[in-house]
Length: 301
Image 1 (cartoon, rainbow, N blue to C red):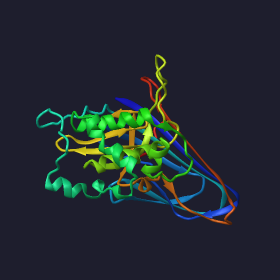
Image 2 (image 1 turned 90 degrees about the horizontal axis):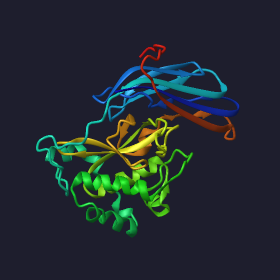
Image 3 (image 1 turned 90 degrees about the vertical axis):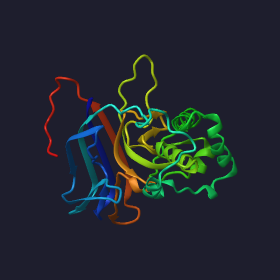
Image 4 (image 1 turned 180 degrees about the vertical axis):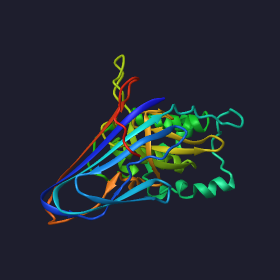
């Protein structure tokens, strides 16, 4: 078990005083057997009234209604969590790996619903051929196939930082052989769905301790991170991070799980001012492990 402190700061800057519309924030995780929320604080540089709700997927959403005007808006989320090791994916009825092609029960197929929908008809031929060849390259079963896909994207595509909030079309990521973490997650999900899996998009953070013995640093630390979730019968949801080649790793700190990337923006909102007022956006994420005996400030949940 790791005790982690996560600080997520977002700063909007403007060339003049502006007022603000409602801001939708997805910054707080839900408890699970893998993660326990110890404390959570949300502070803003302007006074705000907060409304807490759940979205259609069960994620926690805070909507902030701000008072006053400013040329800068800062939003800071601070979480303290216990992150427990992720279980090794196991077919809990037989202990054997789920076969491929995957077979869902009628209930599973109905409940997975839109997480199985694909836009395959819009994919270029080279991408469709690449996806169709995956079962031949990784013939060992469902986990072997998905792990191979995760590792292939990690090893064959170049990571790049993109400051736009939009996610590339999987065809663009495949053509360029490059993208940000959310682009790789979207490509992985597109492949998984075309192969018949239920898959969804996960937004959260990456815990990247100081590398040991010359190991490379993880990609995606210092900002929000994204990866994929795939459902296997009698195994459950399994997380795959194609950016770093991780499978069911306790380095992944889940905040929100959605059907499509645009539904998982950590913060979205509007301002009222001249069109040229917006100067820029700065985002910083720190994930630190609390060492044994280290004293902490206690924050309210």
